[in-house]
Image 1 (cartoon, rainbow, N blue to C red):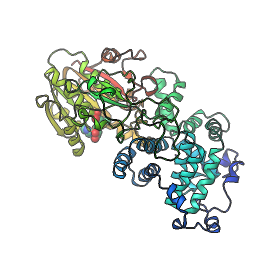
Image 2 (image 1 turned 90 degrees about the horizontal axis):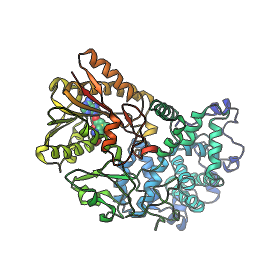
Image 3 (image 1 turned 45 degrees about the vertical axis):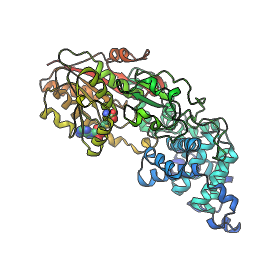
Image 4 (image 1 turned 90 degrees about the vertical axis):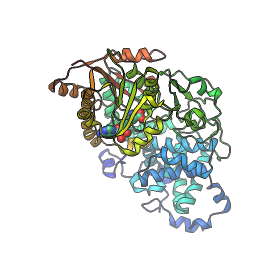
Length: 568
Ligand SMILES: C[S@@+](CC[C@H](N)C(=O)[O-])C[C@H]1O[C@@H](n2cnc3c(N)ncnc32)[C@H](O)[C@@H]1O
């Protein structure tokens, strides 16, 4: 998020860098980087080594330190939080509730960064781009504890200030203390009002308000709202959608048919509790956090918006896919079936779209299936397991060699006879290499990932509208290639984990026109009917011929699915 400049503030009639209230906490005399060397010197705390032992002890909170280091790696190394944090926790021996706390602290802070920057700007009375990056990360972490995690205020402030003393020195720690105390003076509803009013002072820019309160870039809010409307839903669902994106997703497992059973993976059978979370924060983990000073009593680290805690072993919520099961807490990798690739971690919606491709009606042979963009192999493994049951063979194609190796790994439990090949190659060439050679083709196209923002905490801040043009061009070429590679009568599934209309409806529309000009005839299948037929319960879907799933409606990632059949 680009914070508003002083110029922007002036434009809105605000006094640059001041909100008239928090100025008293912006202790005068700090430099432009949020440092207050003078005060530190006055108090004899100018260096880290001069900190009192108690202060140093407080700053030794391993969970908060891991969250901070993750934020720094994301900011400086362009890292992915969910690749950085789990190994860091393992290396540092941070486990169980402390690991769950660190996970929620890091991921929640990253998701809600835009919202917290707006709060910090008001509390610090200065634009965030005038605060040193590490200091700003500390302020975001402290603000998340105060406004998003129900950590007691005194603990949130003092522990974060302790960490600040350790990582940035005494001067910035004073600044962190002043700003967080200002944040702690008002509850979230009041901050919500204040940051909303600051973003939309005239009350005529609902997107600006939604963007800052809902912590999404404005262009993403606009795209998601357009997609809701374009998919037959009400525009005002956007608030629920943004909230769902800001909530830690549950860990969903797939029991690959014929290789594992849902009973085998059920929480009661699981001994997975207490490990380091591999994926997103497990909602059911930890209430109070032993050993992590000052975490909230009774709060659920995976549930920043106050969802009630699920206890490990609690009944899983109803999933849509018959192969899906919710793991209420713990480390999925602790389950033998997951370690052996008979099961895996996979979103419920991702499972459903793969099952729908396998279930789509087809006349004639059903022997050869293709996963055109297979890496890292989640859908390929599910398709491979189904192919094995049906006597079919799967070809898995992936352009990136290291991701093709991940596909091999994902497929290792699938019977050999069901995996014809795992190839490294450009899916756009398959039409030339093997025209009309497959009965079913999955095109799980590379996309912006705007449908999986809850799982990729930092991604909303990295994506830009400029990503769309190259991606949609690639999506068109891949879908066109798939339609040439499928035999007449065969079925193609076009899938994205983005609901953006430019990546979904418009791609399909354009490609059908283009392949029509090239002499192919393609019909749209009744995708909702196929999805309803494979789902375990009623799926709320508007009356259309494609399917758009939503986190706030279906509890899945916002997966798009269009099923197509080549007729000539
Ligand atoms: C959305 S991911 C697929 C996820 C996968 N189906 C799964 O369930 O694990 C898209 C994949 O397409 C791959 N890809 C990108 N361009 C490609 C191309 N030209 N040909 C084949 N694969 C490509 C990316 O490397 C990425 O692994």
